[in-house]
Image 1 (tube, rainbow, N blue to C red):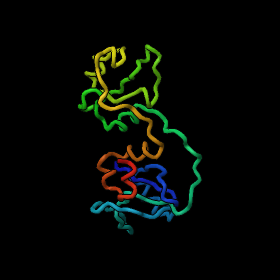
Image 2 (cartoon, rainbow, N blue to C red):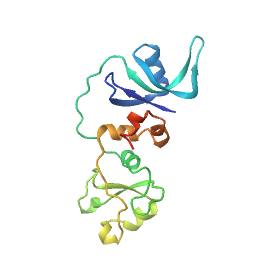
Image 3 (tube, one colour):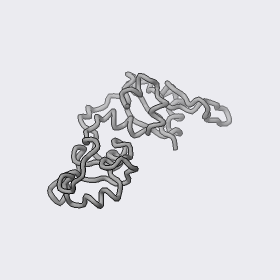
Image 4 (cartoon, rainbow, N blue to C red):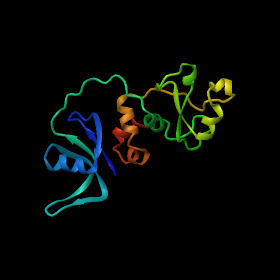
Length: 168
């Protein structure tokens, strides 16, 4: 199901919601559509509206300051765009740069996306010990970047330019 980006009343990204939830927020006058899908429409007995890609809440929602994006395996794969950090092919697993057996933790700076073959070849060694080089260094995304990256490349490309340039 398509995700819809939700902006606060101040235009800052808050979260993503399902398309159905976004339509409900618009129909309840809790949000307005900032950008709609050019072709897809939502139809009902009394309703015919374009499917929203980006909605903005009508009232400002105070959000506690999030200093860091929470780490997750899915988040690492999304951050690295499902590309292996060792060979550049499609990644399906997460590899610990410093293996857990050597005290490595589940953190943004210690994990990278990896293909199963390279993950198996590296095993319980550091990249230096395995004779492998990282194509790019792991980094910690901001909470807003992590949320925008979770939309996917095609969804990011469809966002307004002022919002998409921060996620690229």
